[in-house]
Length: 306
Length: 306
Image 1 (cartoon, each protein chain N blue to C red):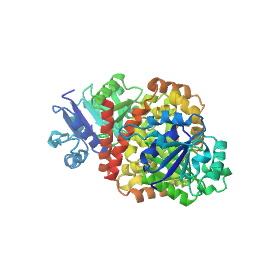
Image 2 (cartoon, rainbow over the protein chains, first blue to last red):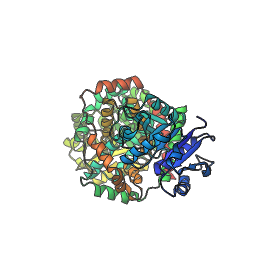
Image 3 (cartoon, each protein chain N blue to C red):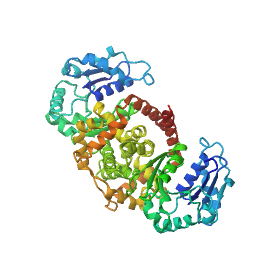
Image 4 (cartoon, chains in turn green, red):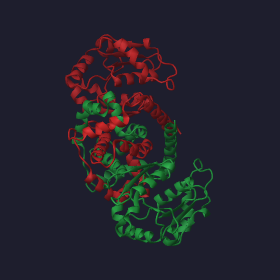
């Protein structure tokens, strides 16, 4: 894998974040190519890629001339081992893109989509060989967060899944194979379930937007950074594990589930919730958040290595 | 507050964890008293309290003779400034306890319940002065986790809430005032909402118990340790904040909400989920989890102090 050729399509936030990841993990003999239809792609990448690096992680900022900016899709993919698209969330775009990529890319290159919502089974509609396409959905921003959700279509080959897992594992990332194409995949479904209840509680005047965040950052946030929800409740159940947990407080769990709110988008909670968020947070310093997140992930990585 | 007298009622896991917290945060001139109806309370505390301390946090293990074990409720509460119960989750027990405590405790002592489900408005049913009682619900284990949910009844006085907030803030904890008595309070409602969707996804064969945990520990766990869900999505929306976030991907959020599972306790998912948890985790080393959690919380504390 030392002379790997990776091509990224799309220079949005996700695309550039992946570029930063690959540049810090590629062997020097490898090649990163970026393609975007915007006419100023070269200057745009030069201007915007540096903010995805910090000195702590990357003492030697890659020299950007080493990033090749392709001027045509054909040129971008023709000898790539991996082609990863982070383009617009738009099915017609992706349908045409993959049909075109398939024409020009090597037969065994891996084809990955960063989509957060359009399943591979839809994206591959115009492809001749649908077994090559795989959704590789990051948790934003991918140059920092370890998770990647691998969501194959029913036609994606096991070999493609296996090679993709190997790629990410070899780079210290955590690729999780999602067994069924599910609306929103898994991470977002979990997070949005909690968000929905949070919206409900703010809408009902139980707590404020800021208090919800304070509750989460001081309880389940750090807990779930160390042990996920099942493991945590399994521990909470003592020797009887998760079963013991539900035996002890399953009644309370069910009461919360029965009483849970089910606000929908457009139900009228938005004005209050959006206004509170704006008043409390203004513009969030994402650099600061990312720096602290890196520190936590370093601690967790150290602990994992033992 | 330097010669504070704190009395804990109940020597379960929560009670002893609170004991460990108070012993590491009380001035030496203060007094911690523990009361439990079990006849071997003294020996039990001596045997079980030490495991809530670790050398890193408490180089000088408190000398346990300094913890007073009361032999009657009257004796336990008669000159206490704070009386904190972590007894059985059983309304008749708490009704009688608080009526009895009220008879013997100083008029201005703070009365706190650690309950995770029985609101103060029910617990105070037999009290003459219902304004003194406040639920102070920890996130387990309280000697480590910063969050405390303060859940007053409609009759709890503002003064009691204020003094309680001051107590915890002065000790570096994060007390959040929940404005309405809500089934399960807030932290558990949020966590259980995510758990419900997790149960659904495992039940549907989309991912395994272990994969759910891996997804959470590698994405929203560390993220929410640093910034809560609202702040995270507010940042995700760019300059337009949370409103921008919903404008961009509100459609996906709603699709996930519409498609969310609503399994109930007893619906039949239990066998699979409990078995998987047991097979994967066996008995969880809680000490290890707590040690790593402390490290993360220390990093977050450092960052907060700047």
